[in-house]
Image 1 (cartoon, rainbow, N blue to C red):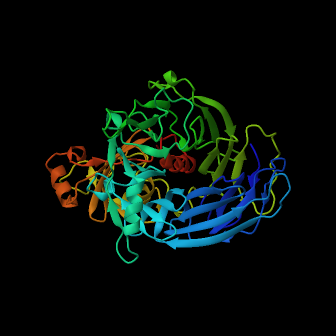
Image 2: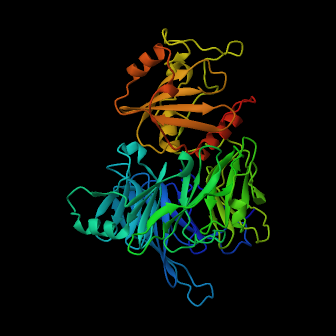
Amino acid sequence: MGPAVDPRPGLYDGGVVYPCGSTLQLNGCRVELWDLESLSSATPKLLCDGIDIDGAINGEKALEEPPDKCTLVLSTRSHRVYALSLRLPNTDGSDSSLFFELIRSWEGYSELMDASCALWAFGRCRAAQTATILHSISGQSVMLVGKEVDPLLDLPGAIQISEQTIAVARRNSLDIYDTAAVLSALNASTPTGPPKSIDPSKSLTYPHSWIGSGLSFIPYQPPWLRKGNTREHSIRLILTEDEFGTSVCLVAYKEEGPPGVVAEYKFDDPYYMFGGEDHWVVGMSWGLSARRMVYAVNTPDDAFLCGVSIPLEPGRLENRIPTMTRVVAEWSIPDGGEDYIYRVVFDESTGVSVVAMTSGRIWIVDPVAPAVEVKEKGFTSDMSMPIHPDPFWPILHSIPWPSSMDDDDEDMDEDQDSIPGWSSSVDEYFPGKNDQDCFGGASWFVNEILRIQGRANTVLFTIPCLVPYPITELVQLEDRLIMIERHEGTGTHEAKLLPTGATVDAVNIHLQEGGSLSELPGNRLAVEELLCRRYSAWRGRVELDDDDYL
């Protein structure tokens, strides 16, 4: 384990990037630049004064400008975007000058997913939860809409910008847009008018009706591709499929046709990268060529980092195998039984990983550097005090939860007289669940796990609760309803968005007539399971029993 960046008081976002051999942290609302090159010291060096920004980082991209500069583009939860100019000293000592300064900021965009020259891609803007392209020079923007009419089914999980195409990965499809068409729409936009909307030129549905989570693109060509998949302009997407939790790579390429026929994109057979049998994985980071990756594990008792090597032979990626860990190394995280992993970033070219903790510590894992003794300098967190598992959701609900269950009687009273097995007494049994800032509450699950913005409230849940949560619950998000089902012991959830116009009264009538929520029409949503595990680890630490909080 490498050195730790000393934490300082204040909210810590854990936003970390790794440009030019350095890292950034958001300390409160300040971006700081740290030197990670010299790993002989127990504490890296703070290179320069930080830059104050508005809000917590939720997206970043480093745009290199040879020979020695780069622009860092950062987005925040408060819908602000910042461009920072960075120049590091030359490693040969010929030029020791350094600068780190704010170039410009923009208002109204959040969740930066990619940036290339003047085009920046965001997962949402203030006006809508829609993939949006901003032309950073002119300030014009366009929206990339998908094939779904319902905007809550159209949320982007990842975006990749290239010279020919802009690819948007959504819950069940890869949508491809012509870059030329996007540029044309940007040129036709007006500063005062609403952004134009662009439809995809091609939409590919994921095989096996998969609903994908953990979406990320592979910008560089992997060494394990099958012959024929190395075609120019191919698009490589990694996702976690919802059936077994396996990490899968899908390659979209242009199929060659007869002369004069326009080539169309299609998916090749999936590549099965590695299995997802560890139910305590809280974060993943893929290398730029997906030759290697790391994932972080956070149990109630421990935390560690696993290094994964993907086989070079395509034949070893043809089928899903029950055990496909492919782990080649593990590193224990100091104080992992008291702290919580917030973010992990992996640099494939150097093998260095950066692990951000909710305490504010940043651990640096370098597999080739000599081990160093970790020495605390300056301010340090008091590890004797419980660490908050997520400062951005400041309210921690009461323990035990549900609060009205006695050891001798685990049955909960039904307050829906005509609906056996259901209750709406949320405040009685789950106090705080509908608080907008509650970690583990309804808004937390919908905002963080389902990635849908807005205030949510649980309105119905199943009883009795023989485990520390309702197996099924109905959540209201403004005028929409979402069914959430938890699978006991497997660490997985199912979420279904009910159709527009569905009401709580209509659901009550359906249940009174003997129906079930699973019978109601709706569309499955992508569930970011990894983000649930930190909550599970926290529950396992604060409640002294052996229940499975997954």
